[in-house]
Length: 304
Image (cartoon, rainbow, N blue to C red; front, side, top):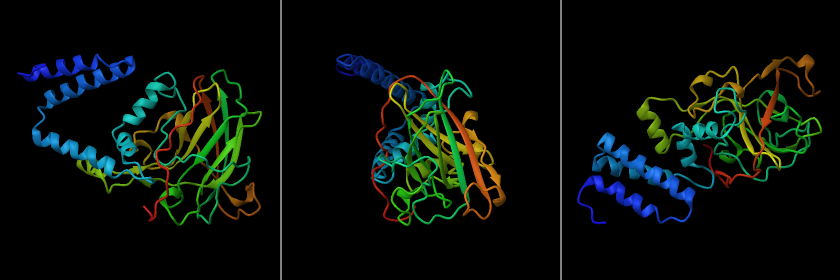
């Protein structure tokens, strides 16, 4: 089609998309074209602004490496990741799901760890925490034999694949639920941390006058055939950034009670001071069990 007016552009592109054989691809791409074209018309996008936007997209790819995923970071900072999660889990309402974001730091093949064992694999400062978690189905019955990946940042706010000083797979483990649907492990209490701001996501946040902090949390990935794989993050109720998470990921169902105790009631003999406990329940839904693609595959050579 020869184009003689801007109004013809969208129609021409949509006509070509009708050739696509995959109906879902055709639906998604057609909607994307309609919305992108409508956006450009609404804001009267200038040529310079369009070139700037293309440069930002290119930089997202250029800043994505084996140990850092700027694209996932950007999707979270725009609220898109949280929106997709809530559209696809629970009842699309507040408190309707324990599902949350996968995040950019999950790694495949974390070490299999027995219930009750520690996931601290190299000297890591921090208050001890003892975690119990239960997995149930939508009918309230315990789900036995589910694989549960656990990971979190250090007390310095760094995941092990960001920090060469930490041992490989430090603060990571893969557990299996028992007959009661329970797992348990020992670790150190995580802290809130800043997301990286040395790329286009940082520019985006500065332009909005926003901070770059995430509240303290522990990640859980729950896998069991017959159930939809669930990603979750359990946030500390006392974190000052709970209601201003840079990734828009905190929901009421995901606020955990990290309870502080003193040494006199510690569950381990080597604990001589403050320690914490966390008891958390998850509900998984029927669906497809699948392991996700790891957002990153390598370890950073320098901290940060």
